Length: 53
Image (cartoon, rainbow, N blue to C red):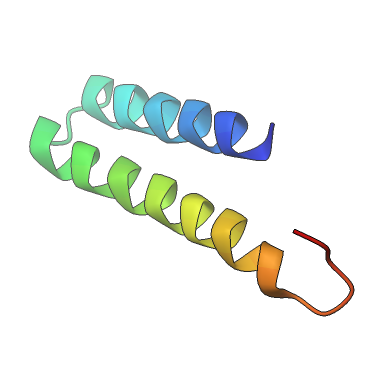
């Protein structure tokens, strides 16, 4: 569920920045970074102590 919210937030940031006049590619890169950080945290959370996979 958290990954879906992260992807949605990244796409919202992309659209908002693009609408405010930022370059489309720069906004896309920022959204991609947000999504990659969220995905990385989702993957790494399985390796925390006390978490069963």
